[in-house]
Image (cartoon, rainbow, N blue to C red; front, side):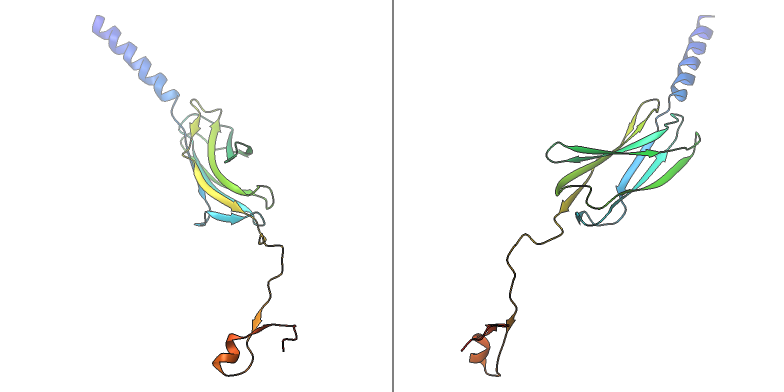
Length: 157
C-alpha cells in the first residue's frame, strides 16, 4: 500500500513538472554582419518554441556597453507544442554608436526563457574627419613629375 502511495505521489510530481515546461527562445542577427552603422536598420531573427509556458510576448533587450538599454516587445502567439519565428527590425538612427549585447526573454512563460546574448557593434555613418580630403593628381609622364603631384584645383608652379 505504501508503494502505491509513493508511486501515485511521484506521478503527480511528474505531471506537474510537465505542466511547467521550459519554453525556448532563439535570437540571432538576420545577416552575418556584426558591425553596422547608425544609418541602417538592424534586423534580428527570433524563434520562440512553446513547450507549455504559453508566453504572450518576447522582449528583445538591446544593452549598450555604457549600461543603457532599449527594449523591443514582440507579440507572440504560438499554440502549445508549436514554434513561431519573427523578424525584429530596429529602425535606423535608433541606436547610438557603441558595443551592444542583444538578449530575448519570453515573458509570462512558466519559467521565463532567456537566450545567450548576441554581440554586435554600431558605428557612425560619416567619417569623423571634419576637413575635406583633396585628391592627388599626377602631371606628366616622367617618374619625377609623378612624385611632385599637386592637389586638384591648385595652381602649382
